[in-house]
Structure formats: C-alpha cells, structure tokens
Length: 146
Image (cartoon, rainbow, N blue to C red; front, top):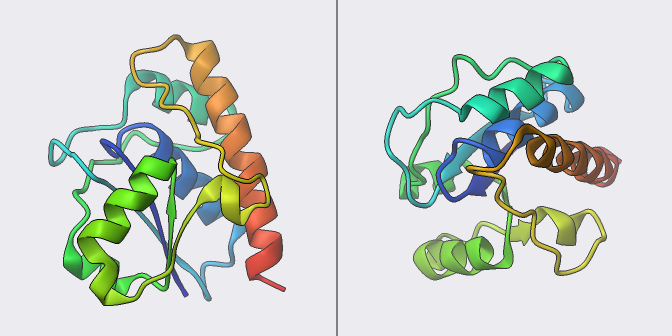
C-alpha cells in the first residue's frame, strides 16, 4: 500500500509524518511518501523539523522537498493532508484520479482539525507538532493495519 503525506512546502509536517510512518508501518507492505503543494524543489527539511525529529529518533537530514504531481498521486492508494485546505486543494487538482484524500486528524478520529504549520516557529512548537503527528499516525496505523 502506498501512503502519501502532504503539507504546504514539504519541509516540516509531511517529512516528519513520513519519518514517523516509516517507523510504524511494516516496510514490506507499505511505501510511505511525502510531498508539498507549493514546493521549492530539493529544499531540505527546516532546521527545527530536523531537531524535533532527532529528539524522537528520526533523521531528516537527507530529506529534500518534493512537489506533489499527478504521477505521485497516481502511485498513492491513500493521501493524508495536514489541513482541510490541503485536502480541498488536492481534491480540486487531482479529483479525477480517484485516490481517497483525508486530513490526518479526520482519519485518526479527531474530526476537522488542522495540524498547524510550525514553519518559522521555535523548536517547542515543532516538538508539539511532531508529538501530535506521532499520535495521529499511530492511531491511523491501528486502523489501516487491522
């Protein structure tokens, strides 16, 4: 199963989500990817994303931002957006491909909650973000892997 996480720039939330998901989902059955809606190609993860991830044992140093494309969406079996706005933008741009799109919070059972963009914030905000991502991805994995 191919899972795609999407945020705005693919330098904070979705790469952290990708790293967390790769540690939770069995790699022989799941291919985890991330992308952004408005990306500077090959931009590294933000410094605070790298630091917050490192505190939880994840390494984002090699991550480079990837723009969401029709081909990437076609590869995905399910897409998890970080916000309602992201979900709507993905649906508007790629609806004809028929890939199911959810916000991560929605799929994990937390309703219409956005995962706030920590970009430009201090490390504490990134740590709160990655903690929430880990919780929601763990809950999502419990649903998907049943």
